[in-house]
Length: 103
Image (cartoon, rainbow, N blue to C red; front, top):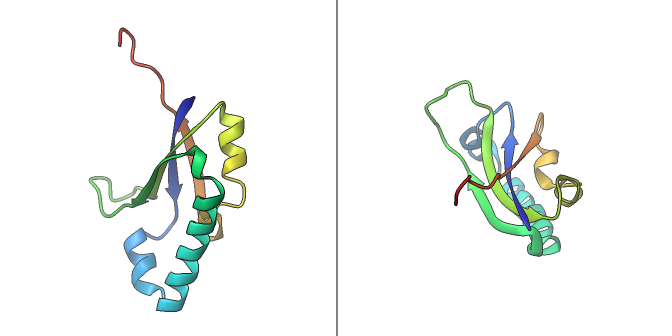
């Protein structure tokens, strides 16, 4: 199986999004994430986390996951209807991990 880095992007930082969310909105968002996780558990290596401030203040990366699958196509299918896509202005980028030469 190949591994893939999934980067969640949004115009507002994860900290901003969490600070503005009501408890009901936070619960509804987590319920969507858990539903997606349970449906795709075999593909998930690391569910990941939201990300805070980094060294690049212009970065729009707000979180990550690590998934595994046979191909980029299978990972894209796994990400269909992902809860992050419900985030206003949210998008997802996927990068394949490559083997290190000589290792």
